[in-house]
Length: 564
Image (cartoon, rainbow, N blue to C red; front, side, top):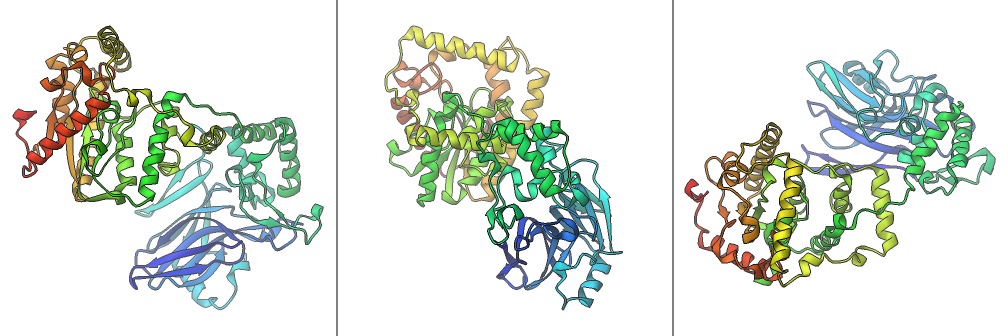
């Protein structure tokens, strides 16, 4: 297995597919020099065609930097970042300015600062040599600096200083076992870590010649997370692996901690059903996107959005990307994810819940399970490989998204009894008072809610600006609520939490805003599944009403604040 890279050469407007040296893997980062002369790619080389009989002098693993012509994208050569008796394990981030090339080493927790002038002179001098096997290339032109924290990844050069992003020790979800697993400093001459062959506990996909299996009988790297060994047996295997593959001996407690980290991937995972109800809807939305459907109307939002819109029933090309619950930050990520499916000039509807303005994000990790497979892993809040693997296994065990039950509230087409409506309104109010720490609906925002408001206002401004830049039409709307719910609001609350929020985010009134919170036509109980959420009938009527207003006001570019 050998990695390849597709490099875009901006000056030549061309794409170059380049095969890297044999055994190249763990390709992470690239950069182009400010003058456009060179492009660099940081990666590792696993020499799996050699029998694993020693580690020294890069026999098994090397850190590498591949060089490309920045003008044409043509591959030039690959140089090694190790020293003859000291590995520079797992290069990750790379950056360059006029004077320096900086490379972080995730495994050995250090950064290489390479003199660019010396590098280029040596490159020209030795261009005809195979530099991918030469451990002396960096002599006298590179300084190795230990990073303050383990696991450096991204790097940037700013005014003569290197700014390094640490991953492992900066992530509160990282365990000590994970730190040990990826620490090449525990290895003889720090040539490799467990993660060099088993990144994230998985597999590098390569086949290796181990003496125990007999040379000529290569074995594919196993995904350790799939091991069925007990934690005790796994700890013993890890200790043996250290002795055989890293030529060192971990403390027994260290082996146990690494085994516990691997074991965490295998723990059964069963998210609360109400938190993943929308996973089935999102999976259907993903399939619509992949099938090439495009849309003229899109809504995001939380509960009032999920239960508020039925575009299909109104005969328009629309999609509902709301979920219960969902904060504005997740709305934004979904819009970017589905952007290719929005027709030019599509209308993007942002339904505002009573507390949208003071809710920057949700804190329960389980609430983000519904986004697995829909959003990139790195954009899902609280995502960890363990949680993602556990969720994927759970979906597989239940037989796929189609086996998830439909949300009963979405199916409801008749209102509950009045007493139940009143009870649900009171229940919502009690819960929100606890969540947002207030008792009086006439009181000003608390200090904590004022901080949250500032965050959400800034985010809504960004979302509106993005929509306009993309040629989309943002619309803000407050969906209606039942008379039971409405009776508990005060005008002071609506102004502080809704109207002032909209005015702060759109001070010039350039975004259409419809406040249907107290709309008389929605006083009828027949439209509601509970005191806050519309039922199937209510969704159709509300969506049709909003479409009617949008079409009526299509020529308007702004709305006066008197409407707010």
